[in-house]
Image (cartoon, rainbow, N blue to C red; front, side):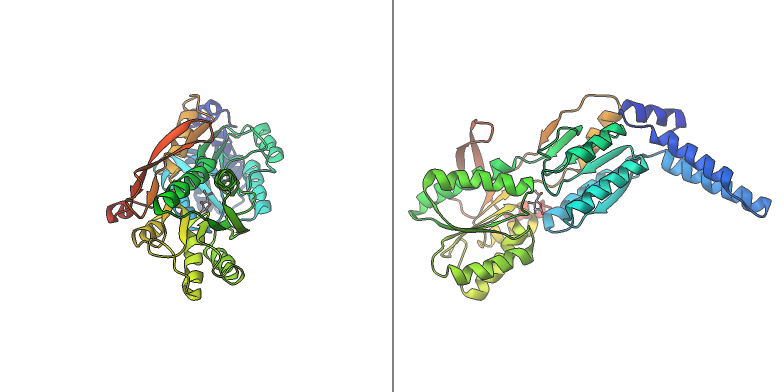
Length: 371
Ligand code: GYE
Protein backbone atom coordinates (compact mmCIF):
# COMPACT_ATOMS: atom_id res chain seq x y z
CA UNK A 1 0.00 0.00 0.00
CA UNK A 2 1.34 3.44 -0.86
CA UNK A 3 1.13 6.57 1.23
CA UNK A 4 -1.43 7.87 -1.27
CA UNK A 5 -3.64 4.86 -0.67
CA UNK A 6 -3.20 5.34 3.04
CA UNK A 7 -4.35 8.93 2.90
CA UNK A 8 -7.35 7.61 1.00
CA UNK A 9 -8.01 4.99 3.62
CA UNK A 10 -7.99 7.60 6.34
CA UNK A 11 -10.32 9.94 4.54
CA UNK A 12 -12.75 7.27 3.37
CA UNK A 13 -13.38 6.30 6.96
CA UNK A 14 -13.79 9.88 7.99
CA UNK A 15 -10.85 9.41 10.31
CA UNK A 16 -7.71 11.49 10.36
CA UNK A 17 -5.34 10.06 7.79
CA UNK A 18 -2.96 8.72 10.39
CA UNK A 19 -1.33 6.44 7.82
CA UNK A 20 0.26 9.41 6.10
CA UNK A 21 0.85 11.27 9.34
CA UNK A 22 2.73 8.25 10.66
CA UNK A 23 4.94 8.34 7.60
CA UNK A 24 5.48 12.08 8.04
CA UNK A 25 6.33 11.54 11.67
CA UNK A 26 8.89 8.89 10.76
CA UNK A 27 10.48 11.29 8.25
CA UNK A 28 10.84 13.89 10.96
CA UNK A 29 12.30 11.32 13.29
CA UNK A 30 14.79 10.28 10.63
CA UNK A 31 15.74 13.89 9.90
CA UNK A 32 16.21 14.60 13.57
CA UNK A 33 18.48 11.67 14.21
CA UNK A 34 21.96 12.77 15.19
CA UNK A 35 24.57 10.17 14.49
CA UNK A 36 28.33 9.97 14.67
CA UNK A 37 29.07 8.11 11.48
CA UNK A 38 27.64 7.85 7.97
CA UNK A 39 26.92 4.16 8.53
CA UNK A 40 24.94 4.89 11.64
CA UNK A 41 23.06 7.64 9.85
CA UNK A 42 22.14 5.28 7.01
CA UNK A 43 21.03 2.58 9.35
CA UNK A 44 18.98 5.05 11.41
CA UNK A 45 17.27 6.29 8.26
CA UNK A 46 16.59 2.74 7.10
CA UNK A 47 15.12 1.82 10.47
CA UNK A 48 12.91 4.88 10.46
CA UNK A 49 11.83 4.09 6.92
CA UNK A 50 11.08 0.48 7.85
CA UNK A 51 9.04 1.61 10.81
CA UNK A 52 7.07 4.00 8.64
CA UNK A 53 6.48 1.32 6.05
CA UNK A 54 5.56 -1.26 8.64
CA UNK A 55 3.06 0.88 10.51
CA UNK A 56 2.08 2.95 7.48
CA UNK A 57 0.85 -0.11 5.61
CA UNK A 58 -1.53 -1.00 8.39
CA UNK A 59 -4.71 0.50 9.73
CA UNK A 60 -4.15 1.39 13.37
CA UNK A 61 -6.82 0.33 15.84
CA UNK A 62 -6.91 0.79 19.60
CA UNK A 63 -9.07 -1.66 21.54
CA UNK A 64 -10.07 -0.82 25.13
CA UNK A 65 -11.21 -4.19 26.46
CA UNK A 66 -13.19 -4.61 29.73
CA UNK A 67 -10.68 -6.92 31.43
CA UNK A 68 -10.10 -10.63 31.84
CA UNK A 69 -12.82 -11.52 34.35
CA UNK A 70 -14.40 -14.53 32.64
CA UNK A 71 -14.14 -17.28 30.03
CA UNK A 72 -16.42 -15.15 27.89
CA UNK A 73 -13.97 -12.26 28.06
CA UNK A 74 -11.05 -14.48 27.05
CA UNK A 75 -13.02 -15.68 24.03
CA UNK A 76 -13.87 -12.08 23.13
CA UNK A 77 -10.25 -10.94 23.35
CA UNK A 78 -9.06 -13.90 21.28
CA UNK A 79 -11.71 -13.25 18.65
CA UNK A 80 -10.81 -9.57 18.26
CA UNK A 81 -7.06 -10.21 18.27
CA UNK A 82 -7.40 -12.95 15.65
CA UNK A 83 -9.54 -10.80 13.34
CA UNK A 84 -7.80 -7.44 13.76
CA UNK A 85 -4.43 -8.91 12.85
CA UNK A 86 -1.46 -7.77 10.78
CA UNK A 87 -2.45 -10.40 8.18
CA UNK A 88 -5.75 -8.57 7.86
CA UNK A 89 -4.01 -5.23 7.51
CA UNK A 90 -4.46 -4.03 11.06
CA UNK A 91 -2.04 -2.90 13.71
CA UNK A 92 -3.96 -3.53 16.93
CA UNK A 93 -3.15 -1.94 20.24
CA UNK A 94 -4.84 -3.89 22.99
CA UNK A 95 -5.50 -2.49 26.45
CA UNK A 96 -6.92 -4.69 29.23
CA UNK A 97 -8.75 -2.19 31.47
CA UNK A 98 -9.11 -4.67 34.35
CA UNK A 99 -12.73 -3.67 35.02
CA UNK A 100 -11.68 -0.12 35.93
CA UNK A 101 -13.89 2.47 34.22
CA UNK A 102 -11.46 5.35 34.81
CA UNK A 103 -8.62 3.32 33.27
CA UNK A 104 -10.85 2.61 30.28
CA UNK A 105 -11.53 6.32 29.71
CA UNK A 106 -7.77 6.96 29.97
CA UNK A 107 -7.06 4.22 27.42
CA UNK A 108 -9.51 5.76 24.96
CA UNK A 109 -8.04 9.24 25.47
CA UNK A 110 -4.60 7.81 24.90
CA UNK A 111 -5.75 6.30 21.58
CA UNK A 112 -7.17 9.68 20.58
CA UNK A 113 -3.90 11.39 21.42
CA UNK A 114 -1.99 8.89 19.31
CA UNK A 115 -4.33 9.52 16.40
CA UNK A 116 -5.21 5.89 15.72
CA UNK A 117 -7.47 5.23 12.73
CA UNK A 118 -10.21 3.50 14.74
CA UNK A 119 -11.10 2.93 18.36
CA UNK A 120 -12.89 -0.20 19.54
CA UNK A 121 -14.50 -0.07 22.98
CA UNK A 122 -16.21 -2.75 25.03
CA UNK A 123 -17.65 -0.38 27.64
CA UNK A 124 -17.34 -1.62 31.23
CA UNK A 125 -20.34 0.49 32.25
CA UNK A 126 -23.03 1.93 30.00
CA UNK A 127 -22.86 5.58 31.08
CA UNK A 128 -20.25 8.34 31.38
CA UNK A 129 -19.21 8.22 27.73
CA UNK A 130 -20.43 11.37 26.03
CA UNK A 131 -17.43 13.60 26.75
CA UNK A 132 -14.77 11.17 25.55
CA UNK A 133 -16.83 10.18 22.52
CA UNK A 134 -17.13 13.86 21.65
CA UNK A 135 -13.34 14.08 21.86
CA UNK A 136 -13.02 11.12 19.47
CA UNK A 137 -15.55 12.69 17.12
CA UNK A 138 -13.64 16.01 17.19
CA UNK A 139 -10.49 14.08 16.28
CA UNK A 140 -12.39 12.36 13.42
CA UNK A 141 -11.72 8.90 14.80
CA UNK A 142 -14.58 6.46 14.24
CA UNK A 143 -15.51 4.46 17.35
CA UNK A 144 -16.82 0.93 17.13
CA UNK A 145 -18.52 -0.37 20.26
CA UNK A 146 -18.66 -4.11 20.80
CA UNK A 147 -20.57 -6.30 23.24
CA UNK A 148 -21.86 -4.01 26.02
CA UNK A 149 -23.73 -0.88 25.01
CA UNK A 150 -23.18 2.81 25.62
CA UNK A 151 -26.50 4.24 26.72
CA UNK A 152 -25.82 7.92 27.30
CA UNK A 153 -24.32 8.94 23.97
CA UNK A 154 -24.84 8.11 20.31
CA UNK A 155 -21.50 9.54 19.21
CA UNK A 156 -20.13 6.23 18.00
CA UNK A 157 -20.16 4.81 14.51
CA UNK A 158 -21.46 1.30 15.08
CA UNK A 159 -22.19 -1.26 17.77
CA UNK A 160 -22.18 -5.05 17.54
CA UNK A 161 -23.30 -7.23 20.42
CA UNK A 162 -26.16 -8.97 22.16
CA UNK A 163 -29.70 -8.07 23.20
CA UNK A 164 -29.15 -8.60 26.93
CA UNK A 165 -32.75 -7.90 27.89
CA UNK A 166 -33.88 -10.72 25.60
CA UNK A 167 -31.42 -13.05 27.35
CA UNK A 168 -33.08 -12.21 30.68
CA UNK A 169 -36.58 -12.52 29.21
CA UNK A 170 -35.70 -15.90 27.70
CA UNK A 171 -34.39 -17.10 31.07
CA UNK A 172 -37.68 -16.02 32.67
CA UNK A 173 -39.79 -17.65 29.96
CA UNK A 174 -37.80 -20.86 30.29
CA UNK A 175 -38.09 -20.94 34.10
CA UNK A 176 -41.84 -20.41 33.91
CA UNK A 177 -42.32 -23.21 31.38
CA UNK A 178 -39.87 -25.55 33.14
CA UNK A 179 -41.45 -25.08 36.58
CA UNK A 180 -44.88 -25.76 35.07
CA UNK A 181 -43.59 -28.89 33.30
CA UNK A 182 -42.07 -30.12 36.59
CA UNK A 183 -45.08 -29.18 38.71
CA UNK A 184 -43.12 -26.70 40.83
CA UNK A 185 -45.46 -23.96 42.01
CA UNK A 186 -43.34 -21.88 44.38
CA UNK A 187 -40.19 -20.28 43.06
CA UNK A 188 -37.82 -18.84 45.66
CA UNK A 189 -35.00 -17.20 43.84
CA UNK A 190 -31.46 -16.11 44.65
CA UNK A 191 -29.83 -13.95 42.02
CA UNK A 192 -26.13 -13.26 41.45
CA UNK A 193 -25.81 -10.33 39.08
CA UNK A 194 -22.90 -9.20 36.91
CA UNK A 195 -20.88 -5.99 37.09
CA UNK A 196 -23.22 -3.29 38.37
CA UNK A 197 -23.98 -0.68 35.73
CA UNK A 198 -22.78 -2.81 32.81
CA UNK A 199 -25.39 -3.12 30.10
CA UNK A 200 -25.11 -6.93 30.33
CA UNK A 201 -26.14 -6.76 33.99
CA UNK A 202 -28.82 -4.12 33.39
CA UNK A 203 -30.45 -6.00 30.50
CA UNK A 204 -30.37 -9.50 32.02
CA UNK A 205 -31.78 -8.15 35.28
CA UNK A 206 -34.50 -6.16 33.53
CA UNK A 207 -35.64 -9.10 31.39
CA UNK A 208 -35.66 -11.68 34.19
CA UNK A 209 -37.28 -9.34 36.72
CA UNK A 210 -40.15 -8.79 34.35
CA UNK A 211 -40.98 -12.49 34.80
CA UNK A 212 -40.47 -12.26 38.59
CA UNK A 213 -42.90 -9.34 38.75
CA UNK A 214 -45.49 -10.72 36.31
CA UNK A 215 -45.60 -14.13 37.98
CA UNK A 216 -45.27 -13.12 41.62
CA UNK A 217 -42.11 -15.20 42.12
CA UNK A 218 -40.22 -14.66 45.35
CA UNK A 219 -36.86 -12.95 44.87
CA UNK A 220 -35.09 -13.63 48.15
CA UNK A 221 -31.95 -11.66 47.38
CA UNK A 222 -29.88 -10.18 44.58
CA UNK A 223 -26.18 -9.33 44.91
CA UNK A 224 -23.38 -8.77 42.45
CA UNK A 225 -20.69 -11.35 41.79
CA UNK A 226 -18.97 -8.98 39.36
CA UNK A 227 -18.98 -11.62 36.60
CA UNK A 228 -16.17 -13.55 38.32
CA UNK A 229 -15.93 -17.06 39.75
CA UNK A 230 -14.65 -15.73 43.09
CA UNK A 231 -17.47 -13.21 43.22
CA UNK A 232 -20.07 -15.91 42.51
CA UNK A 233 -18.59 -18.17 45.16
CA UNK A 234 -18.48 -15.47 47.84
CA UNK A 235 -22.08 -14.38 47.25
CA UNK A 236 -23.29 -18.00 47.24
CA UNK A 237 -21.35 -18.79 50.42
CA UNK A 238 -23.25 -16.04 52.18
CA UNK A 239 -26.57 -17.05 50.55
CA UNK A 240 -26.32 -20.69 51.72
CA UNK A 241 -25.95 -19.43 55.29
CA UNK A 242 -28.64 -16.73 55.18
CA UNK A 243 -31.21 -18.66 53.15
CA UNK A 244 -30.49 -22.28 54.10
CA UNK A 245 -33.40 -24.48 52.98
CA UNK A 246 -35.38 -21.51 51.62
CA UNK A 247 -34.40 -21.35 47.94
CA UNK A 248 -35.03 -23.51 44.90
CA UNK A 249 -33.66 -21.31 42.08
CA UNK A 250 -30.20 -19.74 41.68
CA UNK A 251 -29.67 -17.51 38.66
CA UNK A 252 -26.11 -16.40 37.89
CA UNK A 253 -25.54 -13.76 35.22
CA UNK A 254 -22.55 -15.59 33.78
CA UNK A 255 -20.96 -19.03 33.74
CA UNK A 256 -18.00 -18.10 35.91
CA UNK A 257 -20.31 -16.94 38.69
CA UNK A 258 -22.17 -20.23 38.29
CA UNK A 259 -18.91 -22.18 38.73
CA UNK A 260 -18.33 -20.28 41.99
CA UNK A 261 -21.93 -20.87 43.10
CA UNK A 262 -21.53 -24.58 42.34
CA UNK A 263 -18.42 -24.77 44.55
CA UNK A 264 -20.25 -22.98 47.38
CA UNK A 265 -23.32 -25.23 47.08
CA UNK A 266 -21.11 -28.34 46.97
CA UNK A 267 -19.34 -27.21 50.14
CA UNK A 268 -22.67 -26.55 51.87
CA UNK A 269 -24.21 -29.86 50.76
CA UNK A 270 -26.92 -28.19 48.62
CA UNK A 271 -28.03 -30.26 45.62
CA UNK A 272 -28.70 -28.49 42.33
CA UNK A 273 -29.19 -29.10 38.62
CA UNK A 274 -31.24 -31.79 36.91
CA UNK A 275 -31.33 -34.16 39.91
CA UNK A 276 -31.09 -31.55 42.64
CA UNK A 277 -33.29 -29.36 44.81
CA UNK A 278 -32.15 -26.11 43.19
CA UNK A 279 -32.65 -25.06 39.57
CA UNK A 280 -29.43 -23.42 38.36
CA UNK A 281 -29.58 -20.92 35.48
CA UNK A 282 -26.63 -19.26 33.78
CA UNK A 283 -25.69 -17.01 30.86
CA UNK A 284 -22.80 -17.04 28.35
CA UNK A 285 -22.73 -20.72 27.35
CA UNK A 286 -18.96 -20.90 27.11
CA UNK A 287 -17.61 -24.43 26.69
CA UNK A 288 -16.98 -24.96 30.42
CA UNK A 289 -20.54 -23.76 31.09
CA UNK A 290 -22.00 -26.14 28.52
CA UNK A 291 -19.90 -28.95 30.01
CA UNK A 292 -21.78 -28.34 33.27
CA UNK A 293 -25.08 -28.32 31.36
CA UNK A 294 -24.22 -31.68 29.80
CA UNK A 295 -23.33 -32.99 33.27
CA UNK A 296 -26.76 -31.82 34.49
CA UNK A 297 -25.29 -29.31 36.96
CA UNK A 298 -26.60 -26.21 35.17
CA UNK A 299 -30.22 -26.58 34.01
CA UNK A 300 -30.23 -23.87 31.34
CA UNK A 301 -27.57 -21.61 29.86
CA UNK A 302 -28.49 -18.61 27.71
CA UNK A 303 -25.80 -17.92 25.17
CA UNK A 304 -24.14 -14.59 24.74
CA UNK A 305 -21.87 -14.78 21.74
CA UNK A 306 -18.40 -13.25 22.31
CA UNK A 307 -17.07 -13.81 18.79
CA UNK A 308 -17.33 -10.22 17.60
CA UNK A 309 -13.88 -10.01 16.01
CA UNK A 310 -15.01 -10.85 12.45
CA UNK A 311 -17.91 -8.37 12.65
CA UNK A 312 -15.53 -5.74 13.89
CA UNK A 313 -13.14 -6.37 10.99
CA UNK A 314 -16.02 -6.28 8.56
CA UNK A 315 -17.18 -2.91 9.91
CA UNK A 316 -13.67 -1.45 9.59
CA UNK A 317 -13.31 -2.78 6.04
CA UNK A 318 -16.65 -1.29 5.05
CA UNK A 319 -15.77 2.07 6.58
CA UNK A 320 -12.42 1.96 4.77
CA UNK A 321 -14.31 1.40 1.52
CA UNK A 322 -16.51 4.39 2.29
CA UNK A 323 -19.60 2.24 2.73
CA UNK A 324 -22.44 2.87 5.14
CA UNK A 325 -22.52 0.56 8.14
CA UNK A 326 -25.48 -0.33 10.34
CA UNK A 327 -25.55 1.48 13.67
CA UNK A 328 -26.46 -1.78 15.44
CA UNK A 329 -25.67 -5.42 14.68
CA UNK A 330 -27.11 -8.15 16.91
CA UNK A 331 -25.39 -11.49 17.39
CA UNK A 332 -27.43 -14.66 16.86
CA UNK A 333 -27.57 -16.69 20.06
CA UNK A 334 -29.19 -20.01 20.95
CA UNK A 335 -30.52 -21.13 24.34
CA UNK A 336 -29.12 -24.37 25.79
CA UNK A 337 -30.74 -26.79 28.24
CA UNK A 338 -29.83 -30.03 30.02
CA UNK A 339 -33.10 -31.93 29.58
CA UNK A 340 -35.22 -32.77 26.59
CA UNK A 341 -38.50 -31.60 28.12
CA UNK A 342 -39.45 -28.40 26.32
CA UNK A 343 -38.80 -27.96 22.59
CA UNK A 344 -39.01 -24.18 22.70
CA UNK A 345 -40.11 -21.08 24.58
CA UNK A 346 -42.38 -18.25 23.51
CA UNK A 347 -42.05 -14.77 24.92
CA UNK A 348 -42.45 -11.13 24.03
CA UNK A 349 -39.01 -9.76 23.31
CA UNK A 350 -37.61 -6.35 24.11
CA UNK A 351 -38.81 -5.05 20.73
CA UNK A 352 -42.38 -6.06 21.66
CA UNK A 353 -42.52 -9.00 19.21
CA UNK A 354 -43.79 -12.41 20.24
CA UNK A 355 -41.03 -14.90 19.41
CA UNK A 356 -40.75 -18.66 19.67
CA UNK A 357 -37.19 -19.90 20.05
CA UNK A 358 -35.78 -23.41 20.18
CA UNK A 359 -34.18 -24.88 23.28
CA UNK A 360 -31.14 -26.91 22.35
CA UNK A 361 -30.22 -29.95 24.41
CA UNK A 362 -26.45 -29.91 24.84
CA UNK A 363 -24.32 -32.76 23.55
CA UNK A 364 -20.56 -33.18 23.29
CA UNK A 365 -20.39 -32.00 19.67
CA UNK A 366 -21.90 -28.65 20.68
CA UNK A 367 -19.30 -28.27 23.41
CA UNK A 368 -16.48 -29.19 21.01
CA UNK A 369 -17.58 -26.47 18.59
CA UNK A 370 -17.99 -23.87 21.35
CA UNK A 371 -15.59 -21.19 22.58
O1 GYE B 1 -21.60 -12.25 30.10
C1 GYE B 1 -19.51 -11.98 31.15
C2 GYE B 1 -18.42 -11.03 30.86
O2 GYE B 1 -20.27 -8.26 28.63
C3 GYE B 1 -21.65 -9.96 27.83
O3 GYE B 1 -19.08 -9.86 30.46
C4 GYE B 1 -20.42 -9.62 28.53
C5 GYE B 1 -20.32 -10.22 29.92
C6 GYE B 1 -20.34 -11.72 29.95
O4 GYE B 1 -17.49 -10.93 31.78
O5 GYE B 1 -19.04 -13.28 31.27
